[in-house]
Structures are given as C-alpha cells and as structure tokens.
Length: 485
Image (cartoon, rainbow, N blue to C red; front, side):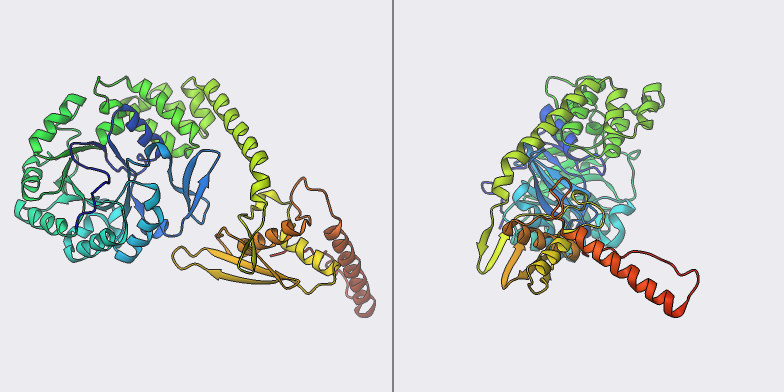
C-alpha cells in the first residue's frame, strides 16, 4: 500500500536532483528560494550515516548528523523540512532501514540511489549495481516502505531495452514506493550521450505512481521554459534537474534566471550562515563559474582556504564579518540562557541524569572530569568511582553510568567513544554535587595540583632510593601525570 496520503506529493513538481558534493544545505535552500518544489540531498552512504549522532544545533538552528570523526554528514533545517528528500546509497535492507529511521523525523521522504554509475556509488553493490539485482531492490524498498512513516522513492537509470526497464519499474511500483525518478541514460552512458526520452515515456505510461524525468540538462533544459518541454517530451509527472541547476540554481525561477554572479553571492550567504564546509562551498562555486574557473577571480577562489577568503574574493568581507558577529552573539546568548536549564539534574529511575557532553577542548591538557571525580572521592574517603558502559548497536555510540557513594549518574547524550561516555558521566556527578570539574576558566580547587605535587615528591623519593641502592648511571627521570582516561 502506498504511503503518500497526507505526505509529500511528487506530482507536477520541479525538483533539484541529488548531486554528490553539490546537494548540501546551501544549494538546497537556494534552489527552494528560486522556485524548486522539492530538493534532494547528495547521496549519503548507509555505512557512514549509521554511525552518526543526531544533534540539534541551536546556534545555526539546524539538525546535524555527525559522524565519529566529528564531520557533519548531513545538515538540515526547518525551512526545508517538508520538502527535502534524503537520498542514501545502500545495498542492505537492514542498514537502509536503520538510516531511514534515524533521519525520518527531519526529512520529507527517503530515496534509494539505484542509478549512479560512479565507483563511489557502485562499490559494495550500491547505485546502478543494484539494477542487476531486482530481488535486492525489492527487499530494500519493501523494508523501507513498511518500516518508516515517510514516503519512499528510488532513482534508477534505464536498462538496455524499454521492455526490461518497464518490467523493473513495474516490480518497483509493487513495493509501495511513492514515486520513481528515471535518468534517461543507461549506466554505461555519460552526459555526452543523448537522453532517451522514449524510455522515460514508456515507464510513465506503464505505472500509476509519479515518474520523475531526469537527464535533460544538456539536450533539453537550458532555461526555465524548457522544463515544461522536457516534461512533455517524456510524458513524466515531474522533472528533476542536476547539472542545469548546479551551473545556475536560478533556473528554477519562473520569471527567468538571474545572473550566475548574483546566484553565487546568494549561495555564499547561505554557506556562511550555515557554516558550510569550505571546500564544499568552493567546489560548488567552481561549478557555477564553469569556463571562468581559469580567470583571475577563479584562480583566487581556487586558492582560498577559508570562508573568509572566499568572501574576500567576491567582495563580501563585510557580510562575512557581520554574519560571524551575529553567530557569536547568538552563541553567547544561548550559553547564558540555557546553562541554568541544562545543568538541572533529573531522576531516571535510580539514576541522576543530565544532557551533557564531554568536549576535550574545554579542558586543559592532562586534566579531565574523571580525574577530578577520583580526587574528590579520595578526599571524601569514598570508594573509587565505578563506571558501567553500554554500546548502542545501531550506531556504536556509548553511554556510561558512574556510581559514587551508592548513587548513580549518567548523561542522556550518547558519545562517540567509551572514554568520552565515562567523562560525560563524571561531569553529571560533579555538577550534581557542585564540585569543580577542571574546565578552562574554572576556579581551581587545588585537588589535582596537590595530588600531582604529592606524586611528584613520591616519584623523586623512589628514584633517589633506586639510585642509592643500584647506582645506575644516566637513569631517565620523569614525572607521572594523571590523564583520567
């Protein structure tokens, strides 16, 4: 049964296609501004996404999915929530479902890439490699349709014959997907090859769900008026644009495209305000420059290493400074107004909890909350803190509970490593008890420094004793430091 009722409709739409390195948040928002009805994110691989943690970014007002390496894999915001489609690369129904369930509350639909012929997508049986395994296609799509509440779609390339293509699409339709995007080229073909409109038309005539025509950027779609012509040539319900939108996203503008230079400036504004990866920003701008990439401006852009330098190339330094000042002001405001709320412990059964995270950069070298908790426990003549840590299967994240004086403490936030989870638990305990935790700028309790002095004296005495007994020449001297790990 189709799950489109009350959901995102794919009929009579103009859509930004999924494009690797292009379809990040700034480009998606710009396409929506210019008139796109639906925007697809770049293909994101299930194995990477399944390790991500969903984090609400209050400063940027976004939802971020962050990988173990702290890289933002997917960033979205409320402006696109009802119109963004999350595209994944997958070859495994269970992993596909786990990723879809991770993102479904923040997107309008989920799409499976079954058309990209590049190695990035095809390795591991993903992308166009799935076209030769219809059983797996059926398993993935059926699992997704049954497992999430949002519409499920897929994007394919055509097969060698119209009959083969139609048969595959009919099988796909039976899984309950809400729409299917068809790139009118075979997986061996490239943009220089003409798009096969007759294949797309045959598909559109053979199924009852919306068919989205893709692949017309060179042959058919050069202006906004050409979009409707391509729709009619293919008999499709909707049209999806990739390269035409990449070169100038204002192609979605019904009043006519703006200049590429104007589109680039608007893109940069979004990139700065949403802290887009600098090299991703630069890549997209280079695509928009096209032949001008070797111009003096293009060379300056290519040499830019930061968002500030990119803004300088385009004469937008004042905008950059103001945007950064606004972000810093918002960050300060949020920190000042949320600290009292976030620091309030709550009881979850017999465990005292807080939503805190351990950030290594907030503490001096060789100082950690675990160290402070251990020293405080020794000072109070309590047993050493005991940590119990569990790992979540779907994303391998960790959560730790520390027991001190027969009371348990835990952070409600999951961490990327066992060590960080233990540190977060220690923070909860220390903040609940009102004990210093060692952060930079915090008043020094003297506990750790005292401990270090005592250990240093003991270490020196031991070494002197060894020297006097063994008379070992050139012995290495050194100090022991608590790391808290």
